Amino acid sequence: MKQYTDNNDRRSFLKRCFGTSCGFSATLLLSPLLARKAYGREVGGDKIGEKPFARIEKLHEGVYALISTPFTKDGKSGDLSTHSNGGLIIGKDKILAIDSYRTPAGASYMADACLAITGRLPTHVVNTHFHFDHLGGTRAFMRDNANPEVIMTQTTRELAFETYRKTVPHPDSPDLSISTLNKWGGYLSDASAIITDEGKPLTLDLGGRTVTITPMSGHTASDLVITDDLSGTTFGGDLIWDGIFPNFMSSLPSQWIKSVESILEKSEGVIVPGHGSVRKVNSASTKSYRSLLAEIENHARVSQHKGITSDQAAKEFKLAESLGNYSYFRNGFHEIAMAAWYGEINK
Ligand SMILES: [Zn+2]
Image (cartoon, rainbow, N blue to C red; front, side):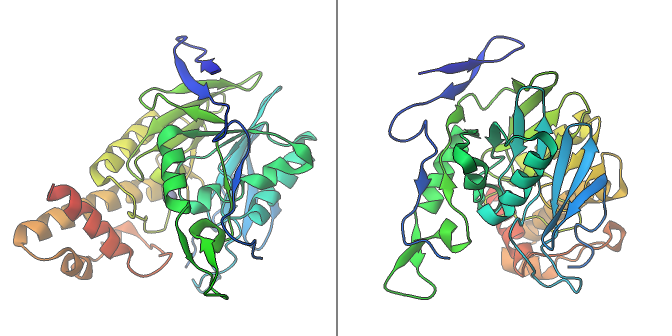
């Protein structure tokens, strides 16, 4: 089994695996292929392109962010082709794509941009965590027989397979089943390189620049934070949200806060959130997000101490005006947040 070795301290972090389950870009297809507010609207870098569902911003030389804009102007759900943010870091030898969005159609926008900028497709794709809107479009980076190395942590890979192997009735033909990922327009592309040591950062040399991949957790059991060492740009995955209430569905809430504190403490450049606009580390929006996480925790602890249910606590939760405006992907996010905190407090 081939292993990568970290450039700095020679420890092995990445284990490349070959065999029936990984080492190739296997795609999980379990069924026939089927066919709010100001969220994400603030431009952080130089806009180089725009689609109804996203725009691409140049943040620094060789560093690009795709910022999804999945809501209509009146806050309704719009085009979810990409749904989440992602990025591109371009070295002399290698090109790293950060996340692969919700659908291949969405990821194609970034693949097209990469081709236009560099004449090549990404050589590496890293999935920050297992949620469908961050990994469903990987196959778009495999066009023209491209074979990018698909990197994820072992935990993320296990969670992705565990979650997306489940099937649900086909929306149009109840006799057929469809994987939950296919239902949302995505496809599961397997990892070809796995991060097995989830306790230490990994350095990836792209040629002329290095990228640090830091395993963390909190939004899910395994989250990756990607930093371009040259510009200090940090891609926070879904540990960082901007202007939208975060999803606690798979979370470890207290660990999430610790990870956010660590990111904000170490960040030297701009931060690309998993959802929302690119922000400076000291921006009012970033501070609001940190305060929001604290308010959610405080409300959960006080409510639990009073003996009320988590659903009741969710109903009573009001965002302080000082936090500014937050959008919601859908109803029920307060309930999910309180349930996550109650689960942790009652352990
Ligand atoms: Zn997520």
